[in-house]
Image 1: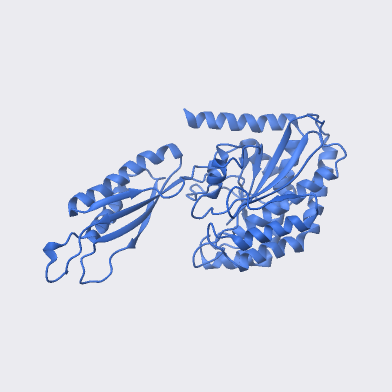
Image 2: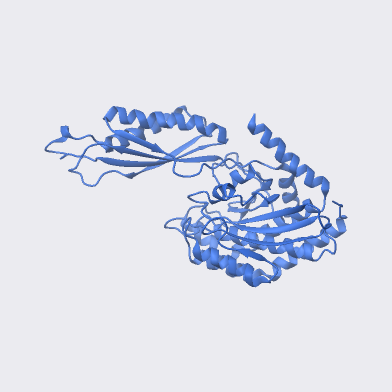
Length: 412
Protein backbone atom coordinates (compact mmCIF):
# COMPACT_ATOMS: atom_id res chain seq x y z
CA UNK A 1 0.00 0.00 0.00
CA UNK A 2 1.46 3.33 -1.12
CA UNK A 3 0.93 6.49 0.90
CA UNK A 4 -0.75 9.35 -0.99
CA UNK A 5 0.52 12.87 -0.39
CA UNK A 6 -1.63 15.30 1.58
CA UNK A 7 -2.51 17.42 -1.45
CA UNK A 8 -4.15 14.47 -3.17
CA UNK A 9 -5.86 13.43 0.05
CA UNK A 10 -7.39 16.90 0.29
CA UNK A 11 -8.47 16.72 -3.34
CA UNK A 12 -10.29 13.47 -2.58
CA UNK A 13 -11.99 15.09 0.40
CA UNK A 14 -13.03 18.08 -1.69
CA UNK A 15 -14.45 15.77 -4.34
CA UNK A 16 -16.56 13.80 -1.89
CA UNK A 17 -17.93 16.97 -0.33
CA UNK A 18 -19.00 18.26 -3.75
CA UNK A 19 -20.59 14.91 -4.51
CA UNK A 20 -22.65 14.94 -1.32
CA UNK A 21 -23.72 18.53 -1.96
CA UNK A 22 -24.75 17.68 -5.54
CA UNK A 23 -27.04 14.92 -4.22
CA UNK A 24 -28.50 17.08 -1.46
CA UNK A 25 -32.06 17.08 -2.80
CA UNK A 26 -32.17 13.33 -3.51
CA UNK A 27 -30.76 12.55 -0.07
CA UNK A 28 -33.26 14.79 1.68
CA UNK A 29 -36.08 13.20 -0.30
CA UNK A 30 -34.84 9.75 0.72
CA UNK A 31 -34.72 10.67 4.39
CA UNK A 32 -38.06 12.47 4.36
CA UNK A 33 -39.76 9.57 2.58
CA UNK A 34 -38.54 7.12 5.25
CA UNK A 35 -39.52 9.57 8.01
CA UNK A 36 -43.04 10.06 6.64
CA UNK A 37 -43.78 6.31 6.60
CA UNK A 38 -42.41 4.98 9.91
CA UNK A 39 -42.09 1.21 10.18
CA UNK A 40 -41.33 -0.90 13.24
CA UNK A 41 -38.34 -3.19 13.67
CA UNK A 42 -38.40 -6.08 11.23
CA UNK A 43 -41.20 -4.58 9.11
CA UNK A 44 -39.23 -1.88 7.28
CA UNK A 45 -40.40 -2.89 3.78
CA UNK A 46 -40.91 0.61 2.42
CA UNK A 47 -37.64 1.96 3.81
CA UNK A 48 -35.74 -1.01 2.40
CA UNK A 49 -37.36 -0.60 -1.01
CA UNK A 50 -36.70 3.15 -0.99
CA UNK A 51 -33.00 2.71 -0.23
CA UNK A 52 -32.65 -0.07 -2.79
CA UNK A 53 -34.27 2.15 -5.41
CA UNK A 54 -31.96 5.02 -4.45
CA UNK A 55 -28.82 2.99 -5.13
CA UNK A 56 -30.23 1.19 -8.16
CA UNK A 57 -31.12 4.50 -9.80
CA UNK A 58 -28.08 6.49 -8.65
CA UNK A 59 -26.02 4.84 -11.38
CA UNK A 60 -25.47 1.35 -12.72
CA UNK A 61 -22.15 0.95 -10.90
CA UNK A 62 -23.69 -0.20 -7.61
CA UNK A 63 -24.41 -3.89 -7.14
CA UNK A 64 -27.55 -4.08 -5.02
CA UNK A 65 -28.70 -7.18 -3.14
CA UNK A 66 -32.12 -7.15 -1.50
CA UNK A 67 -33.10 -8.83 0.66
CA UNK A 68 -29.64 -9.52 2.06
CA UNK A 69 -29.33 -12.11 4.86
CA UNK A 70 -32.45 -10.73 6.61
CA UNK A 71 -35.89 -9.99 5.10
CA UNK A 72 -35.57 -6.19 5.40
CA UNK A 73 -31.79 -5.82 5.05
CA UNK A 74 -29.97 -4.85 1.85
CA UNK A 75 -26.43 -4.41 0.57
CA UNK A 76 -25.20 -1.98 -2.09
CA UNK A 77 -21.56 -2.41 -3.11
CA UNK A 78 -19.18 -0.77 -5.54
CA UNK A 79 -15.70 -1.83 -6.60
CA UNK A 80 -13.10 -2.98 -5.99
CA UNK A 81 -10.93 -0.32 -7.61
CA UNK A 82 -7.31 0.77 -7.25
CA UNK A 83 -4.21 -1.02 -6.10
CA UNK A 84 -2.87 -3.91 -8.12
CA UNK A 85 -4.73 -6.91 -9.44
CA UNK A 86 -4.50 -9.69 -6.88
CA UNK A 87 -3.91 -7.35 -3.93
CA UNK A 88 -6.15 -7.78 -0.85
CA UNK A 89 -9.36 -5.74 -1.02
CA UNK A 90 -10.14 -3.29 1.77
CA UNK A 91 -13.92 -3.23 2.14
CA UNK A 92 -15.25 -0.05 3.76
CA UNK A 93 -18.78 -0.34 5.15
CA UNK A 94 -21.32 2.38 5.90
CA UNK A 95 -24.37 1.30 7.89
CA UNK A 96 -27.96 2.48 7.51
CA UNK A 97 -30.69 2.09 10.11
CA UNK A 98 -34.32 2.84 9.29
CA UNK A 99 -36.71 1.37 11.88
CA UNK A 100 -39.02 3.60 13.90
CA UNK A 101 -40.57 3.52 17.39
CA UNK A 102 -44.11 2.48 18.30
CA UNK A 103 -46.50 5.40 18.51
CA UNK A 104 -44.01 8.22 17.94
CA UNK A 105 -42.36 7.34 14.62
CA UNK A 106 -38.76 8.34 13.94
CA UNK A 107 -38.13 9.74 17.41
CA UNK A 108 -34.58 8.38 17.31
CA UNK A 109 -33.81 9.80 13.87
CA UNK A 110 -33.06 6.54 12.11
CA UNK A 111 -34.22 8.11 8.85
CA UNK A 112 -31.19 10.40 9.21
CA UNK A 113 -28.90 7.45 9.94
CA UNK A 114 -30.03 5.96 6.63
CA UNK A 115 -29.29 9.26 4.90
CA UNK A 116 -25.84 9.53 6.47
CA UNK A 117 -24.91 6.01 5.38
CA UNK A 118 -26.12 6.57 1.82
CA UNK A 119 -24.43 9.98 1.53
CA UNK A 120 -21.10 8.78 2.94
CA UNK A 121 -21.09 5.82 0.54
CA UNK A 122 -21.73 8.09 -2.44
CA UNK A 123 -19.05 10.49 -1.28
CA UNK A 124 -16.32 7.90 -0.82
CA UNK A 125 -17.15 6.34 -4.19
CA UNK A 126 -16.79 9.74 -5.87
CA UNK A 127 -13.47 10.40 -4.12
CA UNK A 128 -12.06 7.07 -5.31
CA UNK A 129 -13.37 7.52 -8.86
CA UNK A 130 -11.69 10.88 -9.07
CA UNK A 131 -8.35 9.39 -7.99
CA UNK A 132 -6.45 7.95 -10.96
CA UNK A 133 -4.63 5.41 -8.82
CA UNK A 134 -6.16 4.67 -5.41
CA UNK A 135 -3.40 3.36 -3.15
CA UNK A 136 -5.14 0.10 -2.24
CA UNK A 137 -7.85 -2.06 -3.74
CA UNK A 138 -10.99 -0.63 -2.18
CA UNK A 139 -14.60 -1.74 -2.11
CA UNK A 140 -17.38 0.49 -0.80
CA UNK A 141 -20.37 -1.21 0.87
CA UNK A 142 -23.55 0.38 2.17
CA UNK A 143 -25.30 -2.11 4.42
CA UNK A 144 -28.93 -1.74 5.43
CA UNK A 145 -29.25 -2.95 9.02
CA UNK A 146 -32.87 -3.22 10.17
CA UNK A 147 -34.48 -3.71 13.57
CA UNK A 148 -32.07 -1.87 15.86
CA UNK A 149 -34.83 -0.74 18.20
CA UNK A 150 -36.20 -4.14 19.14
CA UNK A 151 -34.42 -7.18 17.75
CA UNK A 152 -30.78 -6.28 17.14
CA UNK A 153 -30.63 -6.74 13.39
CA UNK A 154 -26.88 -6.17 13.24
CA UNK A 155 -26.35 -9.09 15.60
CA UNK A 156 -28.36 -11.37 13.33
CA UNK A 157 -26.37 -10.02 10.37
CA UNK A 158 -23.12 -10.82 12.19
CA UNK A 159 -24.34 -14.37 12.76
CA UNK A 160 -25.30 -14.62 9.07
CA UNK A 161 -21.81 -13.55 7.94
CA UNK A 162 -22.72 -10.10 6.61
CA UNK A 163 -19.65 -8.49 8.23
CA UNK A 164 -17.20 -11.27 7.37
CA UNK A 165 -15.72 -9.41 4.39
CA UNK A 166 -15.95 -5.86 5.81
CA UNK A 167 -12.71 -4.36 7.13
CA UNK A 168 -13.82 -0.96 8.45
CA UNK A 169 -17.30 0.16 9.43
CA UNK A 170 -18.83 3.61 9.90
CA UNK A 171 -22.19 4.99 11.01
CA UNK A 172 -23.49 7.97 12.96
CA UNK A 173 -26.50 8.53 15.21
CA UNK A 174 -28.52 11.72 15.90
CA UNK A 175 -28.29 13.11 19.43
CA UNK A 176 -28.26 16.45 21.29
CA UNK A 177 -24.66 17.28 20.40
CA UNK A 178 -21.77 16.20 18.23
CA UNK A 179 -19.44 13.61 19.75
CA UNK A 180 -16.86 11.36 18.17
CA UNK A 181 -17.59 8.72 20.81
CA UNK A 182 -20.07 8.13 23.62
CA UNK A 183 -19.80 5.01 25.78
CA UNK A 184 -23.00 3.16 24.83
CA UNK A 185 -23.68 0.43 27.35
CA UNK A 186 -24.49 -3.28 27.13
CA UNK A 187 -28.15 -4.27 27.18
CA UNK A 188 -30.22 -7.40 27.62
CA UNK A 189 -34.00 -7.77 27.72
CA UNK A 190 -35.74 -10.18 30.09
CA UNK A 191 -39.32 -11.43 29.92
CA UNK A 192 -40.86 -12.66 33.18
CA UNK A 193 -44.13 -14.58 33.18
CA UNK A 194 -45.99 -15.69 36.31
CA UNK A 195 -48.53 -18.50 36.22
CA UNK A 196 -51.02 -18.75 39.09
CA UNK A 197 -54.62 -19.91 39.44
CA UNK A 198 -57.79 -17.95 38.73
CA UNK A 199 -60.64 -17.73 41.21
CA UNK A 200 -63.44 -15.36 42.16
CA UNK A 201 -61.68 -12.53 43.95
CA UNK A 202 -64.52 -11.94 46.41
CA UNK A 203 -66.33 -15.25 46.80
CA UNK A 204 -63.41 -17.73 46.81
CA UNK A 205 -60.10 -15.80 47.00
CA UNK A 206 -58.45 -18.60 48.98
CA UNK A 207 -58.80 -20.87 45.94
CA UNK A 208 -56.66 -18.57 43.80
CA UNK A 209 -52.94 -18.17 43.29
CA UNK A 210 -52.42 -14.51 42.49
CA UNK A 211 -50.02 -13.91 39.60
CA UNK A 212 -50.49 -10.15 39.92
CA UNK A 213 -49.19 -10.29 43.49
CA UNK A 214 -46.11 -12.02 42.10
CA UNK A 215 -45.65 -9.33 39.46
CA UNK A 216 -46.04 -6.52 42.01
CA UNK A 217 -43.61 -8.19 44.41
CA UNK A 218 -41.12 -8.69 41.60
CA UNK A 219 -41.40 -5.04 40.58
CA UNK A 220 -40.88 -3.93 44.17
CA UNK A 221 -37.99 -6.37 44.64
CA UNK A 222 -36.26 -4.79 41.66
CA UNK A 223 -36.92 -1.31 43.06
CA UNK A 224 -35.30 -2.30 46.36
CA UNK A 225 -32.39 -3.92 44.54
CA UNK A 226 -31.52 -0.66 42.77
CA UNK A 227 -30.03 0.92 45.90
CA UNK A 228 -27.46 -1.89 46.01
CA UNK A 229 -26.45 -1.61 42.35
CA UNK A 230 -23.41 0.17 40.98
CA UNK A 231 -24.21 3.75 39.92
CA UNK A 232 -23.78 3.01 36.21
CA UNK A 233 -26.02 -0.10 36.19
CA UNK A 234 -29.62 0.29 35.04
CA UNK A 235 -32.76 -1.83 35.55
CA UNK A 236 -36.06 -0.55 34.18
CA UNK A 237 -39.27 -2.25 33.13
CA UNK A 238 -43.02 -2.47 32.88
CA UNK A 239 -45.89 -4.82 33.74
CA UNK A 240 -47.13 -5.79 30.28
CA UNK A 241 -50.07 -7.90 31.46
CA UNK A 242 -51.65 -7.58 34.89
CA UNK A 243 -54.94 -9.45 34.69
CA UNK A 244 -58.28 -9.21 32.92
CA UNK A 245 -60.92 -8.15 35.48
CA UNK A 246 -60.94 -6.98 39.12
CA UNK A 247 -63.16 -9.82 40.31
CA UNK A 248 -60.91 -12.52 38.82
CA UNK A 249 -57.68 -13.34 40.63
CA UNK A 250 -55.09 -13.09 37.85
CA UNK A 251 -53.78 -16.45 36.71
CA UNK A 252 -51.19 -14.88 34.41
CA UNK A 253 -49.01 -11.78 34.46
CA UNK A 254 -46.03 -10.67 32.44
CA UNK A 255 -43.22 -8.18 33.00
CA UNK A 256 -40.56 -6.87 30.64
CA UNK A 257 -37.29 -5.41 31.91
CA UNK A 258 -34.16 -3.99 30.32
CA UNK A 259 -30.83 -4.60 32.06
CA UNK A 260 -27.87 -2.34 31.25
CA UNK A 261 -24.23 -2.29 32.34
CA UNK A 262 -21.26 -0.32 30.99
CA UNK A 263 -19.47 -3.55 30.02
CA UNK A 264 -21.06 -6.65 28.55
CA UNK A 265 -19.14 -8.88 30.95
CA UNK A 266 -21.05 -7.28 33.88
CA UNK A 267 -24.44 -8.27 32.48
CA UNK A 268 -24.18 -11.77 33.96
CA UNK A 269 -23.92 -10.36 37.49
CA UNK A 270 -26.88 -8.04 37.00
CA UNK A 271 -28.97 -10.83 35.44
CA UNK A 272 -28.28 -13.09 38.43
CA UNK A 273 -29.42 -10.40 40.88
CA UNK A 274 -32.56 -9.63 38.88
CA UNK A 275 -33.47 -13.30 38.49
CA UNK A 276 -33.22 -13.76 42.27
CA UNK A 277 -35.83 -10.99 42.65
CA UNK A 278 -38.14 -12.61 40.11
CA UNK A 279 -37.85 -16.10 41.64
CA UNK A 280 -38.38 -14.79 45.18
CA UNK A 281 -41.71 -13.30 44.13
CA UNK A 282 -42.77 -16.66 42.75
CA UNK A 283 -41.85 -18.44 45.97
CA UNK A 284 -43.69 -15.89 48.10
CA UNK A 285 -46.95 -16.19 46.15
CA UNK A 286 -46.89 -19.84 45.12
CA UNK A 287 -46.76 -18.99 41.43
CA UNK A 288 -44.71 -20.65 38.75
CA UNK A 289 -42.23 -18.32 37.01
CA UNK A 290 -40.88 -18.41 33.49
CA UNK A 291 -37.79 -16.26 32.78
CA UNK A 292 -36.56 -15.84 29.21
CA UNK A 293 -34.27 -13.55 27.23
CA UNK A 294 -36.18 -13.13 23.95
CA UNK A 295 -33.79 -10.92 21.99
CA UNK A 296 -30.10 -10.56 21.27
CA UNK A 297 -27.93 -9.02 23.97
CA UNK A 298 -26.41 -5.69 22.90
CA UNK A 299 -22.73 -5.18 23.68
CA UNK A 300 -21.09 -1.94 24.76
CA UNK A 301 -19.27 -0.07 21.97
CA UNK A 302 -15.52 -0.58 21.81
CA UNK A 303 -13.77 2.75 21.18
CA UNK A 304 -11.24 3.25 18.41
CA UNK A 305 -9.13 6.24 19.36
CA UNK A 306 -7.48 6.62 15.96
CA UNK A 307 -10.78 6.74 14.07
CA UNK A 308 -12.33 9.04 16.69
CA UNK A 309 -9.45 11.52 16.44
CA UNK A 310 -9.56 11.47 12.63
CA UNK A 311 -13.31 12.04 12.68
CA UNK A 312 -12.97 15.00 15.05
CA UNK A 313 -10.26 16.57 12.91
CA UNK A 314 -12.29 16.16 9.73
CA UNK A 315 -15.45 17.36 11.45
CA UNK A 316 -13.78 20.50 12.76
CA UNK A 317 -12.44 21.22 9.27
CA UNK A 318 -16.00 21.49 7.94
CA UNK A 319 -17.54 23.34 10.88
CA UNK A 320 -18.57 20.66 13.36
CA UNK A 321 -18.06 21.64 17.00
CA UNK A 322 -17.39 19.01 19.65
CA UNK A 323 -18.40 20.21 23.12
CA UNK A 324 -17.32 18.40 26.26
CA UNK A 325 -18.85 14.96 26.38
CA UNK A 326 -21.49 14.19 29.05
CA UNK A 327 -20.17 12.36 32.09
CA UNK A 328 -22.79 9.62 31.81
CA UNK A 329 -24.56 8.12 28.83
CA UNK A 330 -26.74 5.04 29.17
CA UNK A 331 -28.01 4.42 25.65
CA UNK A 332 -27.48 1.08 23.92
CA UNK A 333 -27.09 -0.04 20.30
CA UNK A 334 -26.45 -3.24 18.39
CA UNK A 335 -23.48 -1.45 16.80
CA UNK A 336 -21.71 -2.43 20.01
CA UNK A 337 -21.69 -6.03 18.81
CA UNK A 338 -20.30 -4.91 15.45
CA UNK A 339 -17.48 -3.08 17.22
CA UNK A 340 -16.33 -6.42 18.66
CA UNK A 341 -15.88 -7.96 15.18
CA UNK A 342 -14.82 -5.06 12.92
CA UNK A 343 -12.88 -1.84 13.64
CA UNK A 344 -15.35 1.00 13.44
CA UNK A 345 -16.74 4.27 14.67
CA UNK A 346 -20.21 5.36 15.81
CA UNK A 347 -20.17 9.13 16.39
CA UNK A 348 -23.22 11.17 17.38
CA UNK A 349 -24.44 14.33 15.68
CA UNK A 350 -26.54 17.36 16.52
CA UNK A 351 -29.66 17.99 14.38
CA UNK A 352 -30.57 21.52 15.48
CA UNK A 353 -32.74 20.62 18.48
CA UNK A 354 -32.31 20.35 22.22
CA UNK A 355 -35.13 17.80 22.44
CA UNK A 356 -34.27 14.34 23.73
CA UNK A 357 -34.43 11.18 21.64
CA UNK A 358 -37.59 9.08 21.94
CA UNK A 359 -39.87 12.10 22.26
CA UNK A 360 -42.43 13.58 19.86
CA UNK A 361 -40.32 16.73 19.66
CA UNK A 362 -37.37 14.70 18.39
CA UNK A 363 -39.60 13.05 15.79
CA UNK A 364 -40.43 16.50 14.43
CA UNK A 365 -36.76 17.52 14.43
CA UNK A 366 -35.68 14.38 12.55
CA UNK A 367 -38.04 15.26 9.71
CA UNK A 368 -37.24 18.97 9.60
CA UNK A 369 -35.27 20.54 6.77
CA UNK A 370 -32.98 22.31 9.24
CA UNK A 371 -31.54 18.92 10.24
CA UNK A 372 -30.09 18.49 6.76
CA UNK A 373 -27.02 20.70 7.19
CA UNK A 374 -25.92 18.69 10.21
CA UNK A 375 -26.78 15.33 8.69
CA UNK A 376 -24.85 15.86 5.45
CA UNK A 377 -21.76 17.31 7.07
CA UNK A 378 -21.67 14.27 9.35
CA UNK A 379 -21.74 12.04 6.27
CA UNK A 380 -18.89 14.07 4.78
CA UNK A 381 -16.80 13.74 7.96
CA UNK A 382 -17.30 9.96 7.99
CA UNK A 383 -16.25 9.62 4.34
CA UNK A 384 -13.29 11.96 4.87
CA UNK A 385 -12.17 9.79 7.79
CA UNK A 386 -12.33 6.74 5.51
CA UNK A 387 -10.17 8.59 2.95
CA UNK A 388 -7.52 9.30 5.60
CA UNK A 389 -7.28 5.63 6.52
CA UNK A 390 -7.30 4.38 2.92
CA UNK A 391 -4.50 6.75 1.95
CA UNK A 392 -2.14 5.98 4.84
CA UNK A 393 -0.76 2.52 5.63
CA UNK A 394 0.34 3.79 9.05
CA UNK A 395 -3.15 4.98 9.99
CA UNK A 396 -4.72 1.74 8.80
CA UNK A 397 -2.24 -0.20 10.90
CA UNK A 398 -2.97 1.97 13.93
CA UNK A 399 -6.75 1.52 13.53
CA UNK A 400 -6.28 -2.25 13.49
CA UNK A 401 -3.92 -2.10 16.47
CA UNK A 402 -6.42 -0.01 18.48
CA UNK A 403 -9.04 -2.62 17.71
CA UNK A 404 -6.78 -5.49 18.77
CA UNK A 405 -5.72 -3.87 22.05
CA UNK A 406 -9.20 -2.80 23.18
CA UNK A 407 -10.58 -6.27 22.43
CA UNK A 408 -7.71 -7.83 24.36
CA UNK A 409 -8.50 -5.61 27.33
CA UNK A 410 -12.12 -6.81 27.36
CA UNK A 411 -11.14 -10.45 27.05
CA UNK A 412 -8.92 -10.39 30.15
